[in-house]
Length: 408
Image (cartoon, rainbow, N blue to C red; front, top):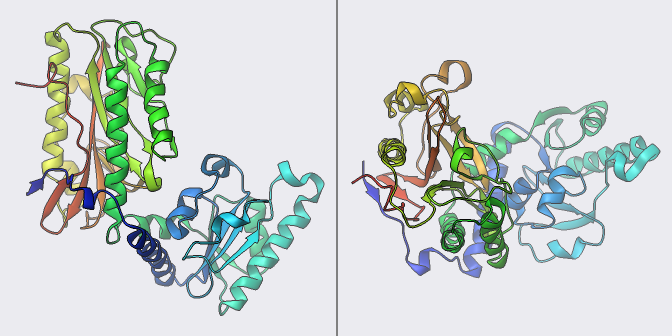
């Protein structure tokens, strides 16, 4: 397997205006193609990540993730309509993917109280009108909406399907120049982690340390950090203990998963574990790091287009017995604008929890490792972001490993 290093050519890490315009059109076409494959007349998208992927629209992404206050109508053929939050209609005026902007109907009890059923009926009638204008059809996909919205469409004779499937399938293969957006997000996030690591001194709290990364994300036109996965010392095992007020002590391991929705809305998702202070690592810390490093490097090298998920799981690095119970929940997962299809679990889990499929050229994949002993103590989290192409793979993430912990 050919593994190329990260592409740091400035021309390949920063899309031009014309490239951005074409990327948006290409992403929209991928969504339309997936709708056509399933004979869906249209989809209605409430998930702000899906809205941004399909149209390039960026507005109140975190707020919109929990409030059905803005949405997009994407037909298989015909005009695209963005329904924007009140007072925000001007934000989508210049998008080359959008034919019309309308005020959204806020189909939520929070906004409507006793008028909710009437507003939801009006919402469904407007969607029905748009479908008819695009040629009709009674198969429609929606996601992240209210149950009442689905019931209203059914009352109008529609078969309602989950829009997540076509959107995940559209997103998982990157369009030309989309990697430039991903690289730009990674380079900015790596600079933020570098800043954060420079602030790692004994006595700083986990929260304060993590805040330096978050500040840099906002300063470089990123959106937000999706999780708070930074922990230190005894809180590194088991994994998934979010950052806290704990003061970090000299000699502690400090583990981070970036989970950054960064520049252009793209995920920069890599993990590193650092050693706090100036002292050398203990033999135990080096052993943990060695195992995690071996797992990531071995599993990166096995990625290739055409390999099935189950074959990959069977070939994956074998976790030593006393670390299996605390293993990370996935071997690898797709990544684009946040985590995405596919999601491949360990050999121990694939029959009960997994599904099969094939890695394809054009996918971006995160390779995960967490090593923490069943009996406790510290743990190590490492992760790399990879692009699969026809002739090999490219390492997208480019953050150094801690030299004091790295196997010699």
